[in-house]
Image (cartoon, rainbow, N blue to C red; front, side, top):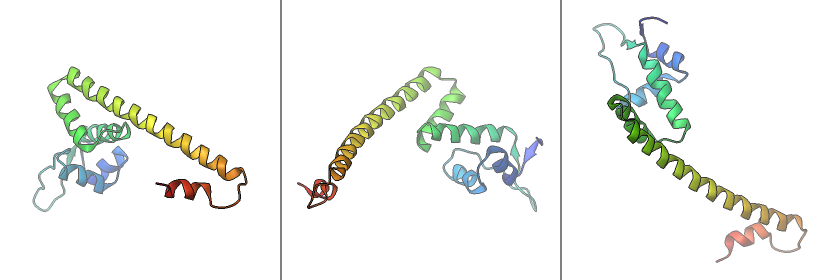
Length: 131
């Protein structure tokens, strides 16, 4: 890898598009390097690591605001606070999983009612329209 990267090269190396880099800059997650006169901005090689960090955190369900907090905690070497944030995120995911399981159970029941061959109103529509 080169010592400095253009925004296009940074995006390629990090596996995102250029607009993602610009968006992260607008959100304050990535610093925007100075633009030299008649030239292109250049990013340090470690910017690739930062973009990948942001994307991986998003995949784990962290919002960009939470990612910003994680980046601050990384600089502060605050492992305890980082663990608390991750624990909270896991609790949120567990609640969402429980909700999804309940939704799945209801949909399976409605589909079984449809498959029973009952004549008349569609059981799915009827259940969704019921008070």
